[in-house]
Length: 168
Image 1 (tube, rainbow, N blue to C red):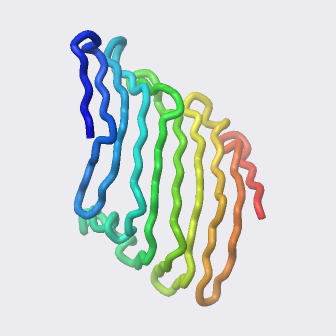
Image 2 (image 1 turned 135 degrees about the horizontal axis):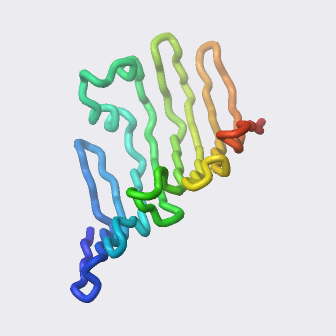
């Protein structure tokens, strides 16, 4: 990755395609930060490329895993976060962002529940200044296994005042 700081604009710092790794998990981060009028994160893009869920679980300290130890994760996941408006941590309580989660078809098991097919595509549009305007869209949730089988999609809006769920 690239770290950018310019002496003619010393109150700005940029990270471009900065790689952050832990264990077997590699991510990429790009951000523009300004210190001109307090801390302001002007842009923020985070990408976790397709990664086995088991590699992510291994990052959690064993004494903190609790119920997740019962999860047998035979699937990968991909996660993207993108700031949609500048964020000032000292002023704004919640950032506005787009969150995309993709779990390509795989398998999963939790205690007696065994899914031979499991997949998810979901997106959340978070409006940090007006949470009720935020939406969550499930493009696909597939869960098929012994005693269970469904595929659905849907959207949730008015999350705070009057959660409304629509879907198929």
